[in-house]
Image 1 (spheres, one colour):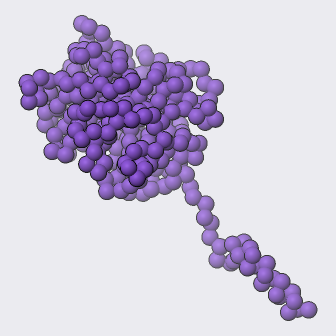
Image 2 (image 1 turned 135 degrees about the vertical axis):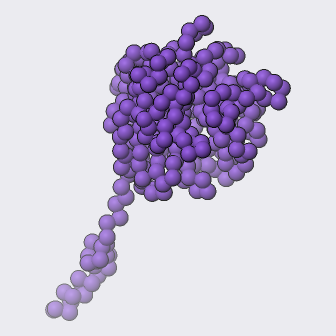
Length: 329
């Protein structure tokens, strides 16, 4: 009888070996969850500095209250540290009402934060400014004492700037609201613009259905240009993209890759792409609006995986509550 009992035990253990094995180890994978940190934050610009992930968002509130910025850092995409008030309007004397949509980059050992300030129209002071710091978390100080771009050129509102380092080491800046997008060349210290070969300083590169929020990255020698469409306060906010052989286009719209999911969230847009050079781990960092929310300023920062098909096209990004798994650099 004892042999029979032992045999039964062996069979049960074989069928349920994970629960019977004394060496069982947890296979649970910790995920970031979405949103990835607390608070109302939008327009997230994500970047890697050294062995750390950084996210620089807009503090999402009423226009008159968007007078400072925080940023967040993480070693693994799971645990985020908040760095408060890395810049505010007290440090930028010409910014009197709002600062938003940061764009960041490191250059020559310094950390630069580009931002939009004031809602400028013709004849007003505002537009795109530049700040600099000795470390990623600031504090950032106004570099110029005035906007880098104040004027409305080609109909593009001077907001939503993205700074892109090209293959040749030169820096380009894509920017624009009101349905228009320009690209300009930055000089080596970001204090001004350089002319193109034809002597012009601004080149329009507006793709079909563009509204705002440009972003650029290179993959396998191709230029992926991305932008936001729809209204930022509405559920139809989304991200589309194009692929080109040149950073100046033409940018022929391929399709939408990020949009709302009525079971998860609405208003998914104004994104950035996070990836480690040489890796195929790509992430889309974006903001969205919780279901049922009616306050246009209630936007939260989220992250989900971004993948490509065999032809290099971006697969539609599935927005989730789970987020992504840990990925230490």
